[in-house]
Amino acid sequence: MTGDWRRDRIGTALRGENPTVLRRLTSGFAVIGDVQFLPGYSVLLVDEPDAQRLSDLPRAKRLSFLSDMDQLGEAVERACRRLDPAFRRVNLEILGNTDPFLRAHVWPRYEWEPADVVGKPVWLYPRERWSDERFRLGPQHDVLRNAISGELDRLRSVT
Image (cartoon, rainbow, N blue to C red; front, side, top):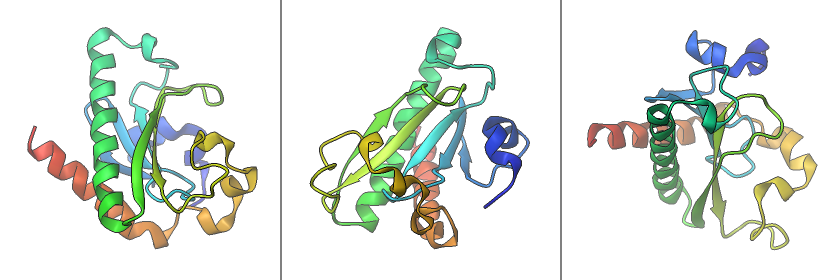
């Protein structure tokens, strides 16, 4: 997966050109993360490119974004629990320190994680985890992509 889509993740999602998109949700796009050192890592991208923080959205859109974050978190939890018996939990984060657009990170956590980071924020993982080719999103993650997408479809069908 290469190309300019990484420079404009939201714009390319809106145009149907972002290859990480799993599903269109009410307030944005559920996407699978570029790196998968924690299999199932996903992100909710808001569908308003100029929104940099949750408070940039009108109240109704904020609540919709938070509801979509919950839905993506549950889908990741269900898929990862089914695919890996060492699944522990999901961490949900809305951060905004690097990229100038609103997004929510959904991090699955596992029993097999190294002891020195298992109880800490994902951001404290060694830098090489983020750039190691072994963890780069690719065809080897299709089963995971399909599992999360399927769970999103099931959750949306009951609401």
